[in-house]
Amino acid sequence: MPKQLDKVFIDVEVDASVAADGALAAKLEEVCPVDIFKAAEGGVEVVEGNLDECVLCNLCVDAAPEGAVRVVKLYER
Amino acid sequence: MRFYEFEARKIVELAGIPVTEYGFCTTAEQARKAAETIGGPVVVKSQVLSGGRMKAGGVKFAETPDEAAEHAEAILKLEINGQMPRGVLVDPKAEVKQEYYAGVVWDGTAKRPLMLFSDIGGIDIEEVAEKHPDHVGRGHLSNLLPISDFEAKQTIAATGVTGSQLNRATQVLARLARLFRDNDMILAEINPLAELTDGSFVALDAHMEMENEAVGRQKALLRRQLEIAADDTREPYEPSAFERNVAAIDAADHRGVIQGRDHGFQGNLGLVIGAGGGSLTLTDAVRSQGGKPANYSEIGGNPSVAKACGLAKQVLEKDGVEKIAVMMSIVSNTRVDIVARGVIKACLELGRDPGEAIAIFRIPGAWEEEGFKILERYGVEYCDRSVSIWEAAGRAVAKIQGTPA
Ligand code: SF4
Image (cartoon, rainbow over all chains, first blue to last red; front, side, top):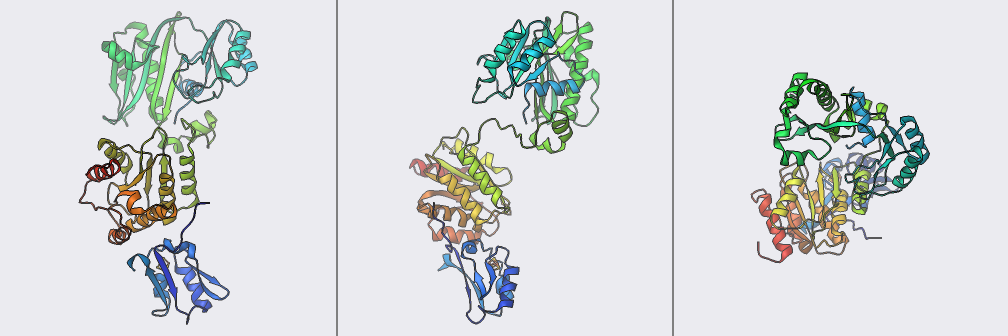
């Protein structure tokens, strides 16, 4: 099987203070156009396989309390 | 879309042009029965979407139904230019007084249909035009106005045909012209159009090709009258693994569009190209710079990173590919950063250094600043719209040939 690399260009960080918030998790799942968030039992789950599809729309950042979700461009590091 | 001869005959028949009594058969037994019904000597012809049937042994004459069955048996097993026949056509051996040529083609330069007629039939019209130019009549048609018989008559009269032959041939050419336009053909050809010993005109062989884009609106003809299945795409050759894989990647993800072809390509420079019909221009640009493309492709409509990556991987994995050129002709809505991520990811997943594997990246347009940051990070040579596609192609070719641009 050829290897598949994830999280090459983009990472998403969810602050521990909101990570278990079920309502926020549902909201993030709804707003992200490329399915990077999943509302799991324990709260917000980040789908690693979809991270590099991030279109930098910032809808997740706007949907969360200020500073709680950060979209990181790994190529700028 | 191309048609088999038996279908082209049917199209001609539906337009009211006389044809000989023929039978389309898929077994030797059917061929025997068709020959019995016709009575007398027949010709058995392989039904393939390819020229050179006669040379390949796909056309044989038979004096009796038994002989017709024997020939059909052999022809049905005969591969011609990589194609197995769809069946055989059993046709009477007509008593021909004279053979003519009648055709209508799409003139891409004039953007109008062009009628062609010659009083020398049975051979390629190109050959007649070269050796006997005064025996070829030509006449453009309007795309909108009704087609009048006199237009066909003028075209035929230019070849010196007169009298009853002129009147009879006029009916054929005018009907052929109407069927061409009504059915969105790009080629409608009767060759030979035969004048029989009784003075009547019949189509002995016909070739038809429909504009691919029109297939959707010609369902009545294709499905109902010709009974051609929707998935019968008439590809002239079996798709390669590369072509099948690219199509599968495209079908699995609705975002954007990718296409790939490699039939007839054997070069070392893989192409990930597209935008507004730019792929042809870009392929030409690479060729005119002395490069050897390994494939043709199209990418656009804002594909996902996974889709761009999938296409680039397929291209990079092709035999003989040393580097890829990622280029688009014009500014489009396809995001530069997304394609950049896709092609770089393809290199990384295959264990290749993007800076070495990507000869040039020239995609102008949306989010290019972001795209350029990614390309810089991975050491990929890129350029913006201030560099022409011809120059960009030249840089890619120079890199692969190891010469300075
Ligand atoms: S920026 Fe947009 S695409 Fe990226 S993770 Fe947030 S919502 Fe999804």
